[in-house]
Length: 455
Image (cartoon, rainbow, N blue to C red; front, side):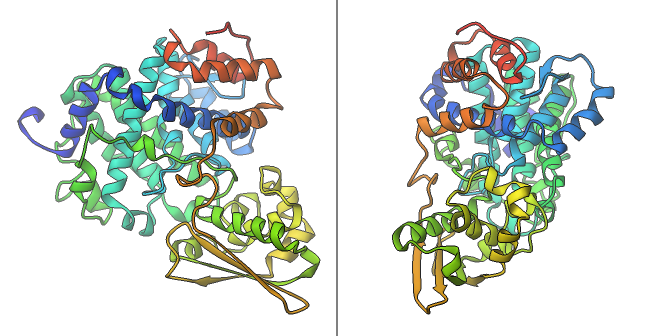
């Protein structure tokens, strides 16, 4: 039976993707640019991480035509290879964007394949933005339908749902029909994977890279006539139920085409898991208000919801684990008065001062606190107790980063790889992305290997 005769989630989403034009999403362009800006900051900041270098070294001998940029590097790969590597680098520092309702990091699995495909095919910046907005919509709506149980069960939702966004976005860029877009989404359902247990290692980033690459692959297969089951997502033996979830179709499809998930995106001021940002803010507040020094501190208690404790109460053995450690997120503000990339790098993470201070931190469950909130209580050697609670962390929807702060984030990440004039030129291009006839000059700048003309 032709897919067009069968109603299903894949087809409903495909109809939205196929029918949506630039005019329909132009009002969302500013937030989409913010997300892509943040994507470049996180990718270029990790461009020479060993995990990126190993992935690149592994893929280079098998790459087809070198059509697409590796952000922050001179090497090039075919579009699928570039999508994989750039998604890894964008997710490595735990500095990427976050969709609060699902804890999906939307940009890495979607922007990476969209940019790689658009560069390979010479596509317009307006098409990039349209496809990106739609990809984020698809991944986050599918995430809404299975949250929060999906993540709590151990599925890494950025990877498992990101592949659907990647497939939909790339299908849009390829100009596929409704049936073919639905097939791409269904094919993606057969490739969705990634587990939370791997979060403290680079294996987590492999699943994000796979979401980007395999989403593009799904769209390319659908373009060539590959088919998928019409209810691959919500069917009795489909993706959601195979992963243990009964999908909430109301949350998935309600208001489709009227409200946009990109408008809910948030951006991190600290390179750590989003659930720890209120902890960091509370520590800064205590440090500033009470002038507490590390020498005075005898013990620290962190109170938060079950997710904070489950994800962050851990022993730290390396920099990756520090970025998902509640203990290190307490140590950084008190020890150094900062919580940036340097404070989560190996040298500081494994310093004697950090190792010792982390032993003072204990976690406590406080079911009264909403998800994302935290209370930090400091007890001094003199017996004094100081307490701070943060409900809405810096970078949240209630306390968002400004455009200028995102510009600064890009500039800081690129400062060692790009001359200042190139950084400024790249920022100008990003904010004017809808006017670029091709994104090749932008990608050349972001590779750090060529100058580009002004948009």
